[in-house]
Image (cartoon, rainbow, N blue to C red; front, side, top):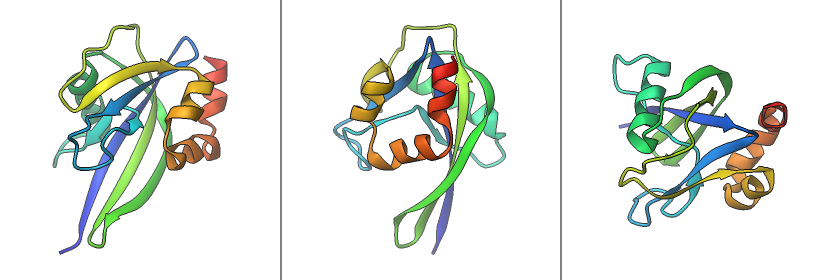
Length: 137
C-alpha cells in the first residue's frame, strides 16, 4: 500500500548561521547525515505546531516560525513518498540539547553548510533562496 508522509523542517537562522544536526549512526534512514531539525506531522496536527514540537523534542529549543521557505517531495522506497515543508525559523537560544535521534549539532556558516549538507538539501537551499535569507540575518 502506498504511503505519503508529511514532514516539516526548521531552517533555524541565528547570527547568520543555521542549526544542523547529525543523525544518529544507528538511524535506519540517512544514518550519520547532517540535516535541519524537524520530523513527521501527526494526524490532526497543525504544520507549525508540529514543527515547534519536533524542534523542542530534537534540540530542546524554542523557535519562532517566520515563513514557509519551500516544499519538495521525494520517495524513500517504491511505496513511500515524503512531502517535505521547510520553514525559516528563528530562536534566541544558542544551547542545544540533543535527543537520542542525533549525535551532534553545529551552528553552521555557509562554508560549513556546503561541506556538511547532503547534495539534495544543499541544492534545495540554493534553488529556493535560503542563502539569501542567511546572508540577510
